[in-house]
Length: 69
Image 1 (spheres, one colour):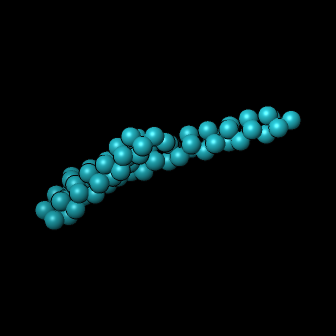
Image 2 (cartoon, one colour; image 1 turned 45 degrees about the vertical axis):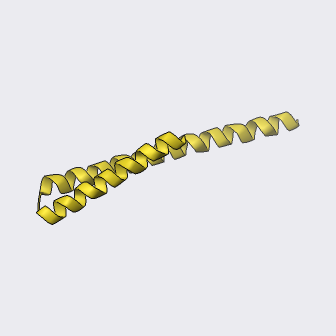
Image 3 (cartoon, one colour; image 1 turned 45 degrees about the horizontal axis):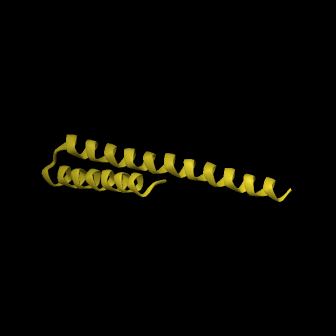
């Protein structure tokens, strides 16, 4: 995962957490729900990028193993 992508996901998570907290303080259910949705989106972005990293690492490991043959 690139540093830029990770920063975007972290920013989205922080934005969502702030919106959720604001919703909790004001009693605004819409802000609470939207904040939680943004946090879920950030979590999904992290999971997708982590999966890409795992595939890339596995591919690199396979290439190194083949090179040893």
